[in-house]
Length: 303
Image 1 (cartoon, rainbow, N blue to C red):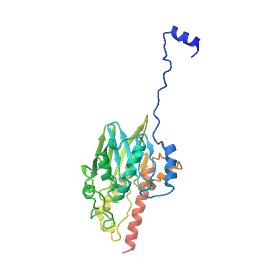
Image 2: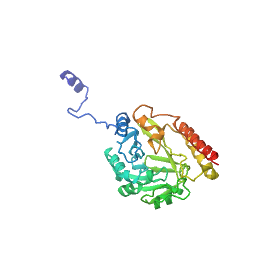
Image 3: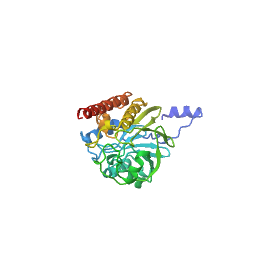
């Protein structure tokens, strides 16, 4: 500061503390602009369920902390955090490490949610529950599966799925109910189809004044054991189509899926496709409908 300016300010009764460091503005952790390309390079086209991937900030307080082939979503709140999906059992430590790499505490996770109740998405939940002490919240049909580690007999893939370590479910939830924690609110969408107890989730993440509606939509792919026919289960098929319609109708600006490739996340992390897409859920639902129709056509042709 010049001497003349100092005298002027003193004459006006204005004082400025000298030598005070400027206020430090916290920088975003793992912003997609830099962490996204690192994720794409680390995974290099791999869908490996246990291949380590760096964490990526999707938007505001929402982070991808899973592996190259399996998503796990951390949502950070002012009274604790929410984690959706725990990957296969072998990925639990990788997810925990990613949370720590971001500078957050695994012990701050208060709720663990799920997409569909298969070992590749919920197999790591038991270990993450032990590490965090979090309450697991599940759909009613998925509760027994999570607590026994045994796939249900009415799962289309029954007989072909691996068991997994059981977790303790503290609460069940149905379509339209909310999970609230401080400044966080997530809405459950029941989306049976790929499994009987599958859930999708919707929430809003705000970065300053920029708020985005994020949807974590379940896989909803018509995969089954060799002898299962979706057309032999009309009530289940009706619920399946209703699930797809529910995803299509949901407010949705950013789409995430349990398998990153299903929502083109590798390309979006590489900055080759936009993260923000208000048509993403509708387009995803269109693809799901085609996949289901193709599967039903094959079943009809095989009669």
